[in-house]
Image 1 (cartoon, one colour):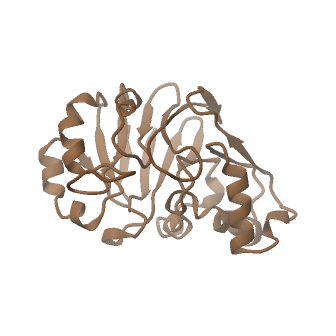
Image 2 (spheres, helix red, strand yellow; image 1 turned 180 degrees about the vertical axis):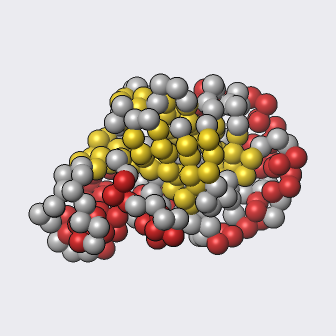
Length: 247
């Protein structure tokens, strides 16, 4: 399994980073985990052909995590002229939110006669699910998005990738990270306790509880980005746009 960090930024592009988007290449296929608003631009900047993506797995339905989907679908329809099917998997409410986004951004686009087949799979929280041959389990976390916000654990039968999504600290992250070859965890802020997100103050003393082979921080605001030496000194890794990690 190979991970390419397409985007590791927060909602505001702090540090010039693209919105959250991770490319996973496995023996079973190629997936995006999250597809934030800037992700189509970021994919093309990295030389990634969107037509090579088999599926997209969403942690939650905020624009910086799923907002590029209308653009990616319409690019596939009109420019890339995609022919292969595409699966979009996400929490309950994904199909309705995607249709609303298509209509808001490009009226009548949700009723296109699509040249390629695409469908939405809505994943029941906490129920193990197969997504294009990958074992996926989602865990509800604490982050308001108008639909369940989830952490994700994904396995291709050999390696295990885990991701917190956006959330305050919840003890469920310990089981999500357990045994993962890589655990991507959001760390939006440097200090304090804030709703919907984790700070370094909160995360640092819990690192010892996260039994993953590697822990990598993502989704950081400008103040957090100014303290990355502390993260590395604590034994964690820092997500950087364009980084490639072999799991």
